Image 1: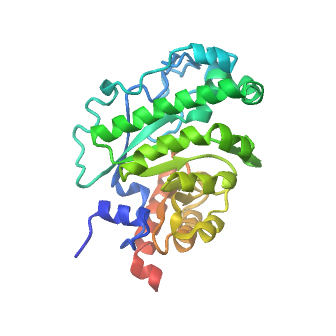
Image 2 (image 1 turned 120 degrees about the vertical axis):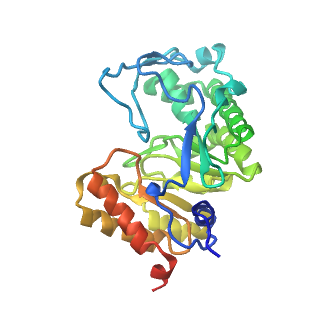
Image 3 (image 1 turned 180 degrees about the vertical axis):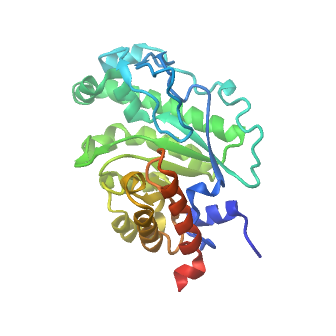
Length: 320
């Protein structure tokens, strides 16, 4: 009996021997946004952060991860942050009409969150003051991070109540050379609230996709223990085959093809990278083949990725 593409996707996520490696251009999942998730094109967001204006001629692509960057912060200390009100994630109007026109029999709907607790904390204070506060105002910083986590937990509950079937969280903890925050400090300050957000999805039997940039291997085990289902990581920073060898069927990946190759390589380079990802990460499930960053790429390279997925990602081809 043939499986639907959505069923095949879920089997890949949970290592249940999919018929083929699912891939990004298949159109079998859809990322949706609650009202207020994206920053404004110009001005102050609902958290009080001011964003750089975008040129009127700039068209934001549907898959682009960021639209602008903060240029002014509402506070300089964690204590100040605790005196401010934050958006109410319990407001069901944030999710009104979210699934209109979507065929959920054929599509896995994934609710995207805004900046994760750590990134939101830094966005509100600025990196210099934020990192300083984690050490000099540890109690206030922890309380502020917990408030941000409460907001995200409410967003997760709202998504699920609206009928969303999975969540997409993003929080950056590392650069190309390693962690931006000491893992021990992260476990004490950030992980408790983050685990509470993930638990909302986990307890509902919903998958959790998690994006973090940089060389983030130090955080993966804790995130798996918290209940993350699928990781979106940078190939050039993380050794994905080593992570798969270490964690086996506990870990799944969204990506596998370096964005640098997708942007600057030839179609042949893309096919080779895709085949390597399929062979090392997708043989028993656990891979959704895609570029590791959702950017705009040359059309011929997008086509090469699809071609590799269709011709090399079939389980019969993998077995041969």
